Length: 506
Image 1: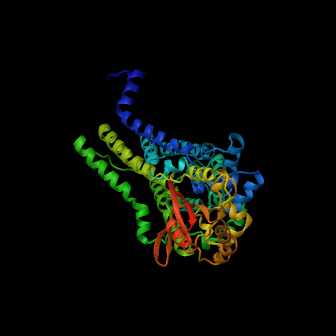
Image 2 (image 1 turned 90 degrees about the vertical axis):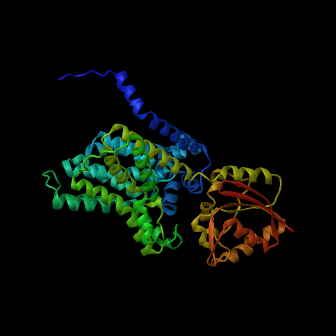
Image 3 (image 1 turned 45 degrees about the vertical axis):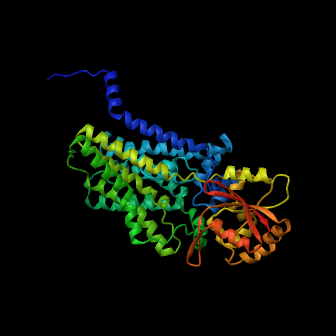
C-alpha cells in the first residue's frame, strides 16, 4: 500500500478550492451584520439601555420589574461600565454569545456525530433566520440561546459519564438560562424527556441514579426560587403582554416546517442535481437517545409558546420566543448534509443553501428604526422654539394608561430618548386615545399644551393598530385624532420605521 504525503500548502489549496465561495458568502454576511453594530438602537434595544444606564442596584431593580430575567442586563451593565454607552458596546455581549454558541455546538456535534457534521451544523446554524440578527441585537435572546445549549450539552455529558464536574456545570448553566430569559426555562421539559428516555431504554452503566437526578433538580429549584418574585410581576401584567395574534394549529405547524427552509433546501437540491448530475446519500444512522434529544429540543419550544399563548390569553408566539429550537435543527441538518457522499455535490448544495438563507435573513433585518436620526432631526429643528414634542414609541405597555402616567414607568416607555436625548422630555401618548383613562390624561395634560402653542413635532414608530375590526397604521390613526383638534400635517420625514411629523393648527 502506498502512502502519499500532502504538504500543508496542498491541503490549504484544497480547502480554498472547496470552500472559497462559501467563505466569501460568510464574509459578506458578517460584514453586513457587523455593519449594523454602530447603527441606531431599535426600540427594544433602547429599553435595554434604559435598564442599564445608571447604577448596579438600579439595573437590578429595572431588570426585575421591566424585563424577563436580570442576568443578561447585569452583563450589559458591566460592559457599559467598561466600554461606555455606545451602540457597539451594548451589542457586544450578543456578538460574543454567538461566537461561543458556534464553538459549543461544534463540540456537541463532534461528540454526537463527527467533525464533518459539526462543521456543516455550524454553517446551517448561522444561516437560519434570526441567528445572525440576534447576534448583533442588544437583547437577551442570543445569550439565553447559548446558555440553554451549554446546559443541554452538559446534561448529555453528565448522563453519559456521570462525572461530578458535568453535573455541577449542568446545574450552573441551567440556572443562568432561567435568569437570562424565563421562557427559555422550557429547556427543562426537553431535558426531562431525554432523561426519562435514557432511564427507560439506554443501557449505560454511567447513567446517574434517580435519587441523584432528584437532588440535582431540587438544587436547581432552590437556586431559581428567587425568580418567582419576577415571574409573579410578569404574570400580574400578562393582560398587556400580548405581542402577537393568537396562534392557530397552522401557525404551530409552520413554525416546525419552516417554509423558507423547505423551499431553499428543495431549490438547492434541484440546482445540485443539474450541476452534479446525481446526489448520493449514505444511510442515516443515529443513536435513539440522541435522536430523541434533538427532536424534543426542536419541537418543544414552539409547542410551549403555542400552549402558553392559547391558555393564558397573552400571545407570545413569535420566533424570538422559540428560537432556542434552532440549535437542534442545525445539528440534525448538519448530520443529514454530511451523508452526501460526493464532496462536489455536498459543496454545491451547502453553498447554494447557505447563500439563499443568508440573503433571506438579510432582508429580514430588524435594524429598521433610526431613532438616533429622528430625534436629532427633531432636536435641531425645534431648537430655539418653545413648541412641544410628543412621542408615540409603540411599546406594548402603553396600552395601560397607568404606565403612561406613572413617573418611572413612563420613562421606560420613552426609552429611545434615554440615549438619544432631546433638549426637553417629550410628552408621551397612550397606545390608543379611547383606552381606559386615556381621555382624562390627554384632556388634562397633552391637549391644552398643544392648543397653547399651535404647532408641535410628533415622533412615532410605524406600526399597525386594530381599530373597530380594521387595521390602520399608527401615523394614520394619530393624524385622524389630531385633525379633530384642528391640527394638520405640514411636514413629514421618515427614518426607517420611525416618522417625524410637524403639525400646525389651521
